[in-house]
Image (cartoon, rainbow, N blue to C red; front, side, top):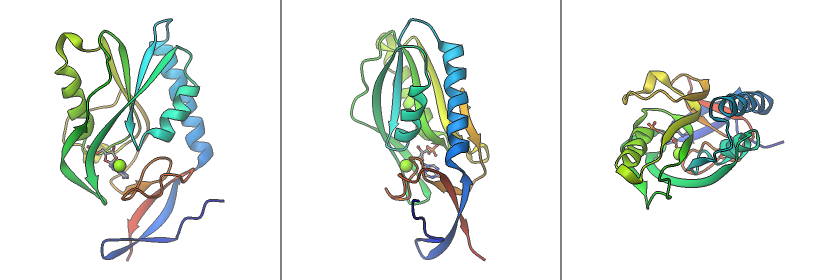
Length: 189
Ligand code: IMP
Ligand code: MG
């Protein structure tokens, strides 16, 4: 059993940690998403899985195993977050893989303000005639109340409230990504 403390210190506050989605709930939902994506995008034509590192690693690893079309796995790194607060600006680290004329599924752990995915989509749009033919977004989690960029993922695992979540790839300052379940942090008292 993976150990999670009952509370985690964030800055100068102790936050309580409570389970939100179990391992089996996640597995079932990711299986449904794979089936839906395979139905919508299924063909002999390959799909480029553009994994947004590091958060979407675990989600993407499970999602691709349920896809029925041929896939090519690529990754991109975005930097945007510090602690539990969005840093406001988002940066695409390094260059994008060659996705000219391809069908691309961006795989993201969570859409919070929506700025990360909006920035990535802008970068992709800026590729012009070296750009992909189709771009879709799959996010394991979505925080609709937190959006400030108008972005709705094409595929969403679960919609959640504003609380910060950890586990199944999601981190707090680089930690807790290995938890097999998702837990939320709540202010105490
Ligand atoms: P956005 O640009 O505000 O949509 O932020 C998206 C990125 O912030 C995600 O890819 C995550 O890396 C990180 N993030 C947002 N909310 C959470 C959370 O609750 N837990 C962990 N990471 C989060
Ligand atoms: Mg992160």
